[in-house]
Length: 195
Image 1 (cartoon, rainbow, N blue to C red):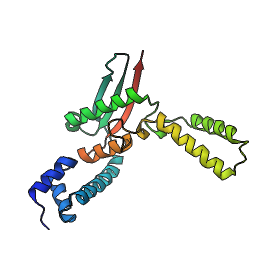
Image 2 (cartoon, helix red, strand yellow):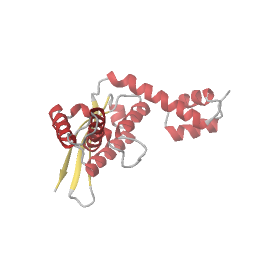
Image 3 (spheres, rainbow, N blue to C red):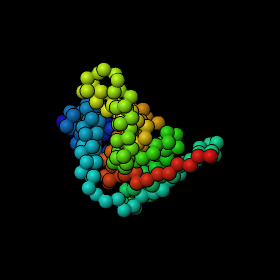
Image 4 (spheres, rainbow, N blue to C red):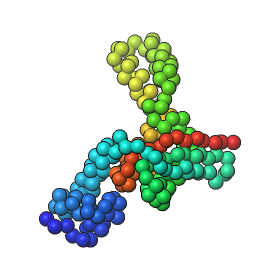
């Protein structure tokens, strides 16, 4: 089935995917816009996975200062090329991430950056709290895991819910950006200041 031009344009506006990709997805979905959007999302995620191994040599340092001038953040968002680093949408992404850091005060970019001793100490603390609970060990283990995940959600930027769209995490936002720009995008580091 040949895709209609207006459907291709509509899908392009919704997804920001390249025109040719929108056309292929619409043809594959037999004209169904919603299904085509899902196809593009899946392809974007696959593209993002392929980009995991690429190196990020370029990027931007962006800031956000809250209106009360009492709190703000700097973030380093990396990409592969200057072409993407100079893109206004990339800069806007960096700005939004700096706003996220300012608002929710994460301590680490991802689980990988969390010191293992902090995880183990927290695990011991929860185990100590639950030792007299008379619950089976496998249930205690699940409770501890759930509590740790809740803690990590607050501590790790990539695991946080995006403040501008509660349907996605920062990790998902970065994957979408990787698919959209066609390059590996990663948060390198950040720092938050507060008076």
